[in-house]
Amino acid sequence: MEAFSRSEALTAQRAWWLERPWREVSRLPVDSQAAANTEATTSTVRVTLDAESTRALLHDVPKAWHTQPQEPLLTALAQALTAWSGGAVALVDVEGHGREDVLPGMDVSRTVGWFTRVFPALLDLRATKGPGEALRAVKEGLRAVPSQGMGWGLLRHVAQDASLAALPLAEVGFNHLGQVDGAVGAGAPFVLAPEGESLRQRAPSSRRSYLLDVTSAVRDGRLEAIWTFSEAMHRRETVTRVAEDFLVRLRALVDASRAPDAGGHSPSDFPLAKVKQAQLDKLSARFGKKTR
Image (cartoon, rainbow, N blue to C red; front, side):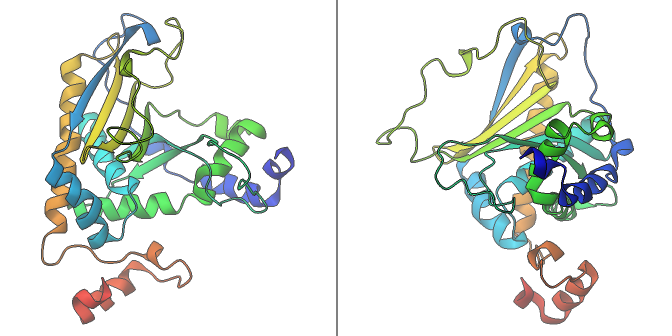
């Protein structure tokens, strides 16, 4: 792994990361800095999308824009964060299980569990208008990340690249757990721990990595998002407002997906074709819904 972190393939990824619009990232406002951002000061806000909107988010939105589960969620998150900060580029650390087939020669088929993968996603909403354009921009940006972000960790922490270490740190962490229906709950092989969110996993004096930590999952047919924050940094009403705006943005995507002219393909849907968005738009205008 250490040898691969210093390979030519990873060197090319380093250049890609350094070319991202880091200077356009807006920092999040804080309500107070009277105390340290520690585990002892944490609290949570939970917001839930209704069942019908969740169903549409899982089926109608992907059908219209050919998206993967995280893409609409990160779009709405980016919109809510940039509306709050006044910027146009949101920086979010995206967490995944790390078992994707993204590194050559890496066979994890005889292992169990996951290898946590975290990479900084610069969600660029500049020059976008409306939920559809925002979704397409975030979708293309996420799919352009080399090796789905696995290379970032190798370069930043294994190779200890100084240039990457000097880049801004994300103030928001995001992890979508997917659809847990069937895995937990009545009749399922597992149940959620009764301690729930009150179970502390770190020492109270530990410094938190983020100002906001957002974890989402679909349970009982509804999307739930838990926003963890520090009461030393933000008031509950502030986080609640941003979290509810996140739901508003998701509903706007659902509404947009139902419009007669909604959706369409984007270049990442055809990775071998090297096609540009303008070409796809011309095909869409010529053949209509046949290109969707």
